[in-house]
Amino acid sequence: MGWQDEAKNDIEQWKLVMPKDADNNPIDWDWVRGLDLAGGIGSLASAVTTAEASHPQSAPGDPAALTPQQLHDALKADYATRERLEAIIAQCNTAFMMDFDRLVDSYRLPRALAYANRRLNDEISLLIDEGQARGLWNVTYKRQGKGTAAVLSAPRGAASRANPDQGTLDVDSDAGLDALASVNLDDLKDRTAQILVARAERRKTERRQRHDTENLVARANLSGATAPGSERSRQPAGEADGPKADWRSVYLPGRDIDTVMGIDIETSGTDPARVYIIDVGFEYMNMASPKPANAPASCGYEQSDYEPGDAYGQSRLSFGVPEANARHGNPFILDLTGIDVRERGPRSGLKPFDEWAEAQSGLLQRLVRQPYVAHNAAFEHGFFMLNVAGYAEAYRAGNITIVDTMPMSRQWDSGSKSSAAHPFGDNTLDAYAKRQGALAPSQSERHLGLEDAHIMLVAMKHHLHTLREEGRGPWGPSGQPGVGGKRCGRR
Image (cartoon, rainbow, N blue to C red; front, side, top):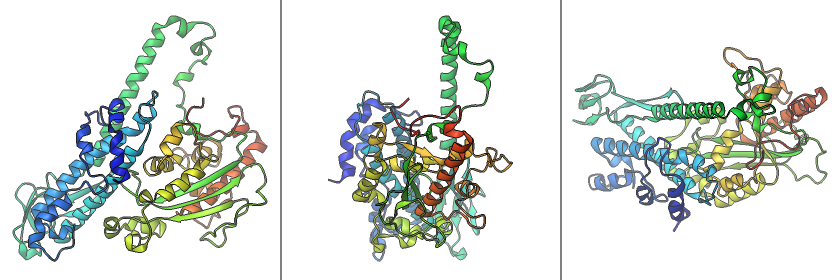
């Protein structure tokens, strides 16, 4: 039995703390229990088994063996499974962190669900690729609200009985398409964007309702609202209606911060429940004390003009992707990072990070030793929660401290000025590193883990030195003692 199946033993615990998913629908935990999380939860395998008799030359699990209708049905079923599963995954973090009675002691079930969902997402991509290759549909990937959706449309040369843009296609064999195929596109819709927008609106409404309730309670509690010395009586007039606090402030460093581990990850997308970690780079730097005399030797940077300086313990880790992900490819990530996932499949010898327990364990051991620093740290944190065995448990127990350089740029860097393109200032790692002298104006952020972790730490150390001299940031009126950063259980 694999760890994914063992994770289903935790379902009874999760039932106690999470009766509904992120879309407020009751969770059918028996359905979850019946999923083959290790072997695959997509419909392709069963559909191909049915079709293989007429396509004996097809490889196992190859969507080329499917008829157009089978291809349609498999994609429709996979979309439905993904929507249902992702709504559960999306609620797990809140349920786990709000489980103050510690009824759930492990986060391995959400990790197992995400493991299965990534491979389901790969299958969806292959099904879409196959349909497009046969001329059953055209596909465009569009940014819609908070998500990106695959939009299928009728190909040129196909007449639609139902809708000229999206509907049932009568495919003309003279157009080079599947002969006499009929595919209904009306029920093949990627609803990711609509789901995320609706979910965000619902949470916004819930927050507003909680806020209104708290205000009513405060008004009813006359002693708490008006008594001399109460919190509300000490609040300056108009402060409650002033600018909202930046939620990222909890990630700011304190004035006693010293040894940190800077880390940056490269991934095949942005959703940790759908995509893979393909590159991890980290190194260490002391923000106050000297570099250790016995600092371990470092691996080199890709850029020859990057100098280690005060950094030490540099490491670069490369990871693979499953065969289906490699077959689909990822031109955007190739252009951004130079990493071609088509060369990261099983034949490359590189293991996917979510299948490599030793790599996860080694990374976790480093993350708990000292604060770790990332730029837009919520991104790394989200991927670690759903990929690194033991990370969620260590984080909830208060054994992990996270520092983020993005709020340092946003709140403490006077060079970060608002503009039409950047209403809150340009706080990208590239811009922050250039303003702090960690990256030459002629250079650009490399989008590789180790290189980006390095310029981030160099920028952070330079910025802290300036802030200390000027009595700002951690040394200003609102600065905090200690190492700072976000850590559970600390107030």
